[in-house]
Image (tube, rainbow, N blue to C red):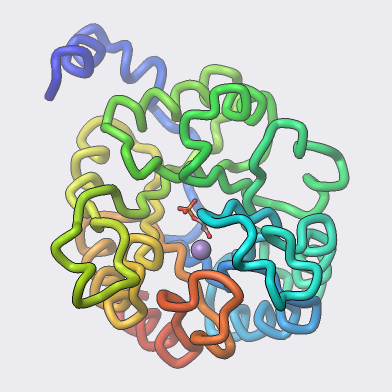
Length: 276
Ligand code: PEP
Ligand code: MN
């Protein structure tokens, strides 16, 4: 334990700022699944109904999509400007109405916290790239809406706890940490080109030792490769994760974004069988 965290623990400051967390997901493990991006109304509504049928707890779907390369993905994808944005949110709302599932979706900036956006999202995803966007975190701390805070690919344990604290101290107690892989695994890429991150599973027990914030593990971004998603899903649950967020798609290789890591309905059902 580093000196700062140790000092906070000894003085009980960590428990004042971070614990006890008064919020938990209503089911454990809590499973969030759906496509990386909302691609059309028909697709997301149909997929939401399938997710509901197989026992998924919440539907994910990106409407605002921060892409590493902002232009290349747009070519040939009608109207998809780093996500379908406002249209995508509307489609998610319809998917919620048709399936009854709560919606998990990312917002990228505090100016996207509007009545119409919040009307479509039940759990606000903070993306990796915004893990230390303090203006955004401060603004989310003012809301009474659950926040799924994704760890930055560079995030240390202090930075994770600090980002959580930033939301909690403003009054929003509904925070879950999402672990989604970190920098530093170049040894895989020549064989598995889509692998970009290292799935840091040890952060699950490490955080559990310090706080009782729910932890959702993201085996999709952590692995970057669909064949590894089932193994890392099970490993994350075994390590103590409270739930998973998994990218799934009706035709995984055709996903508009993150195609290499998307899994099929059948694979998702097998994972659920193994962990539920
Ligand atoms: C996503 O969930 O699709 C996403 C963009 O994730 P991350 O912010 O972890 O890269
Ligand atoms: Mn994705």
